[in-house]
Length: 526
Ligand code: GLN
Image 1: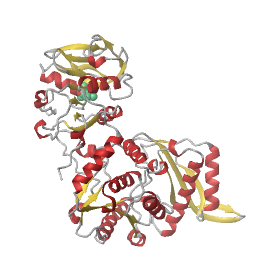
Image 2 (image 1 turned 30 degrees about the vertical axis):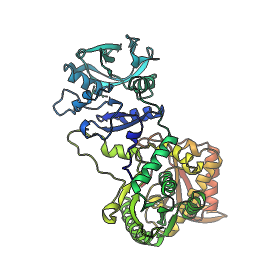
Image 3 (image 1 turned 30 degrees about the horizontal axis):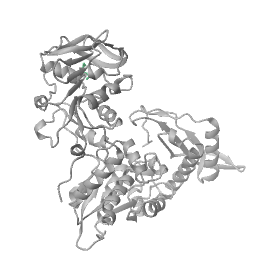
Image 4 (image 1 turned 45 degrees about the vertical axis):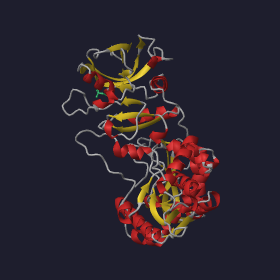
């Protein structure tokens, strides 16, 4: 069987070279939104090492100054590829630096909206773009036009807001077209990718499924088998379903019940994956083992570490017991539901002094198990994975499920984790989520959960004094989970949930709602 082709070899691809801007991944995201495939690599990428030829190259923004001694610079071979190039902010300053060194620190920093004046309306980059608001975020600016370039657009503070080479398809923008504050920014990226680079805009999830299935088959080959852990979450379920579509019963999923999953979770996952999605799944009940190790532990970091290590231990042990479905075959691969943001995180350019981070999703599993890694979602963003899940027939509810942390309810039971405490937190959480769904709020909220506080409080129930614990409810809204705001419920909802929890969950005498944003608080309490 021939070697599997990379996605970038199958689809016309724009290469985004990352100079470390906080917006770099958005460039990739925007291009994919109009069905042009794009991939991001660090700005230090050597062109000769690429296994595919980009249809165009975008140089991102970045925190450095091109004239600084330790500033990162692009491989000049990009100019020999003969493909269009677009520099954004630092990227444009880099083009100017290479073509005459006309870059200097500006008198004032320009951060926020600015209005551009399109001077050259014939520029193909500015098709359908008028004088409009764009987003600036820079301190340095071009002090003169780079050799061979012309001005396309100006703004009050930036006489070179957009420039283009007189003969070659090389362009520069001082502002950021990839952020939504640049009102017509997406047209600029579309014009660049489709009109100027001539990319076919055929990147779609339907096409991705076909190429990915062939790629998995080529990679795994005719006789190898694959195992992977599933958690009941979106990513691992989508990855497992895709594997099953590609290689059928040669893929084996394992769910480790660590005793701190949600209410009835193991049974529900078993039903959904086996009956619903036809995935070969083994459920391992290791709850006693996990809870035993957690006995007496109250430190959040220790809890996380214990659960992580125990998971690897249990998974390795149980995976070794899985027999291949077909005689003469061997389990050779480990499936991992890594997504593109994790990949970006591990390869993105962090500057000359910082080493590039190793991949955190792989954990310690591979070294010991002698398995090869297979990551079918590694090119996808979260919303793309959800779309893929829907196309693969995974239920809407599962595809849109809130994220759930690996250490599970163990970090939502503050203090010592015991079976009894987990049970209380689990029941309260179940009621809370059930009501959120009933009130039609689940998809308006990014993440919601209940946690059990290890404090006792006095209450009165049926004329009896009670002295029981507190449940704290949390619900947040966020785009990227880096910052988050707490969700504003109607009083009616909170009253209803609070009364249900106190009435139905033994051991709870009081319910509070967490009204802290992130930062300063984190999403989870531990
Ligand atoms: N550091 C450069 C400046 O201050 C580039 C900024 C950017 O790319 N956003 O102008």
